[in-house]
Length: 59
Image (cartoon, rainbow, N blue to C red; front, side, top):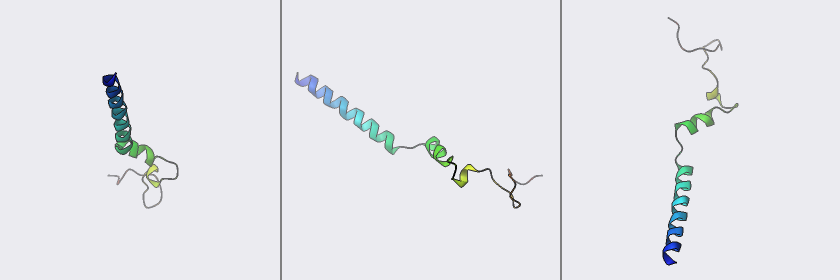
C-alpha cells in the first residue's frame, strides 16, 4: 500500500514538473506564432522606401 502511494505521488510530481517545464520553455515556433498577430508589425512583409512590399534590393 505504501509503495502504491509513493508511486502515485512520484507520478503526480513528474506530471507537474513536465507541465511547468512546458510553460517555461517556449521554442522558436511559439515565438513565431505570437509574432503573427494582426497588430504586430513583424507580421507585415518588408517594405521599400516607397511603401511597396519588398524582399530586398533588385539586381
